[in-house]
Length: 397
Ligand SMILES: Cc1cc2nc3c(=O)[nH]c(=O)nc-3n(C[C@H](O)[C@H](O)[C@H](O)COP(=O)(O)OP(=O)(O)OC[C@H]3O[C@@H](n4cnc5c(N)ncnc54)[C@H](O)[C@@H]3O)c2cc1C
Image 1 (cartoon, rainbow, N blue to C red):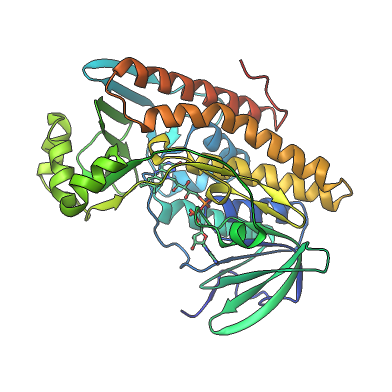
Image 2 (tube, protein in one colour):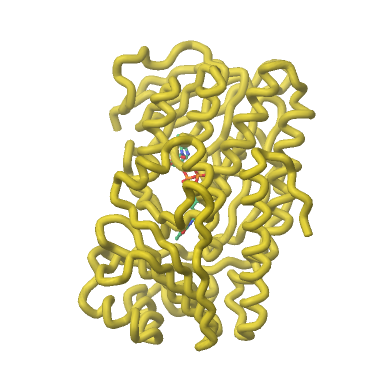
């Protein structure tokens, strides 16, 4: 693939940057934008195409919306005709709980932008802030100095291999992070199971309401997104997917959706996209930093997609890591700045991960599921407080 420079008037790849960010989506583009706003020289690379799609059901939690607003990019999400959702329905086997999303300042509800909308908005904001962002460029390996400190990366610039130096290398390169492998980021925790998901884009739903229907071992959900479409998805335990659904994804999808007639009637008129399936990966937490490196988003902290929370964590991680690296380059020690970044991330994760694991198990007892979502909602309240207070670590109840 030839590489794409989102800011063609700028020189392509200097010999040295303050920070190289690997991956330029929710985590990486946001980190690059914030670092550049701190006045640092930043190169972000992504092996994918600018504006390309990725598996996601698009839901962003309130704290993430608050960040997009504070960063000045929420209006671009609105301008892309992304609907605002103001109601969330949880149906626990017929026991219905309806929630009005609170309006808080500029955050007038929840937005669930397609990744083909959100990720390029963040890339454009990074470029506008002064970062160089190159697509179609792979990070081949992290390089280290004699002390073992990460000091740059070898990049594949469309067949031309070039070593570029940096004071920090940030891995925002997703759950299978090459950066994490190369720096030997320690695995701190791994869940034992995950849920699988299958989804398609469907028209005809109200664009102001997120719907979730739970039954033992299954969830069917509807999340409004751009272009008059909603993601209609189903989740099931990964082992059930492996045994029954993998061979007949369409059959499994339609069987699940047919259990919710008000959803099935829209799907029956014909999905407006093909089906996408995710077989499930257990969540994990990796060490988030070391000498000359840090991890953002799924690279360091992956949760089951049933949480619909990976984008929000990538945005939060971006702000934590960018502030910490800026503090290091302004004179703080890495132990102070990056250590405190990890402490904050882990404090949030300690509350969120067990709740997500409880939901991802899709238990047959609906009161267990309710409890998991109540815990998740409390964790989200705490992360909102964290963002709202601009990163003073909240006291957890
Ligand atoms: C089925 C499914 C549904 C989901 N639904 C939701 C949801 O509703 N809400 C939500 O918040 N989250 C959801 N998620 C999770 C969410 O998509 C991720 O948490 C989020 O994308 C993480 O962002 P990231 O920037 O950390 O990594 P990613 O989005 O994975 O981006 C990593 C980038 O790094 C690039 N890259 C990788 N290796 C290299 C390399 N060596 N060199 C250069 N570039 C590289 C890749 O090309 C990629 O663009 C879902 C996930 C799945 C699988």
